[in-house]
Length: 471
Image (cartoon, rainbow, N blue to C red; front, top):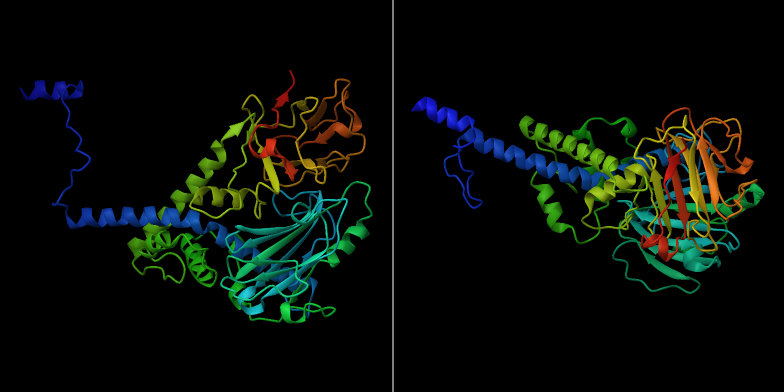
């Protein structure tokens, strides 16, 4: 009988029934109890890692910004001054997925110590520009620029959370920040016919000043002790416990906007989150590290799985927006740090062609926009297609072309009104000179940026066509 029972079990005709959903046990051993607690800590740490990753990246960016300010503006107050990029990005640029369309500027401000602060912008018409304000979690606070002010000059008062004052005379608008530490990114479009000196002059006219002296020439923000932001080695951090240690401190200075109190309370049970101290127990720290590894695997899976359409990663409508979408927020900042909200810009990233194969510069790839199907954007803005290698860096090439835009010299439309772009390593024999975007000799990535997208792009009615290799 025992042999028969064993045989039936192997055949699947006899098996143990799973417990009912509501079934629980009261007889766990101490080891089993500890295992359950470890699994709980690991799960909490996984979510906390996703949630806090944008804040970690923000802290890392501040540290690197301060180093840049020390080098480029010695003797000036580092925090609160502009670090201006005076030239377009090149293959020597080490930032991932840089654009080659705008001149950049970056500033970080500690409003609790230096604010309120007045942002003044000159009249900038006839070209796209923006000054994007992000909180310490890279959530969008506001955007000052072409879309929101029509290019008019203005002065904007930026105040910390909880500020109770009234709008002073001469101030265009009051912007309330969601955290006490913020960053501002300026972008000014540089077309192919511009004198770059004129764009640099516009950069210099975008200023930050304390409210009490903002009308005075050359007013500067007051110096502050910025030691808390100067943490070495964050770009090379591999230890998840170090990650949580620095983010626990940083998010204590810059807690997230209201609404996530219950989630923060959950993180605190594992010693994670604002003002928390990591547990001392080795087993608990091991569970936290394993939870961080789980989260990184989740991130990798999300990046690889899309969703994709026509080979392009579908932009998330919640980019740069606060909320419970921790995974989306983490992925957005890893893939494109400082991403703009969808009403300001949409970023379509492609790693794969229309046949779901990796993009390969050794193939003869074509991207064709049918007549009337170019990216739908506001007339005051632009679109661009930028080429990157598989590490998201610009690609050196013999014609020094890193992107194609509507103003690319020699860009040619077909007789039927369509536009075909040639994405390949070798110069195509049959391509108009302006339609070739050189690719590396192997895997590549392309980014289609659409600034001030129209409703058709934002709601998904319009979507980029597939990149197709030719037989």
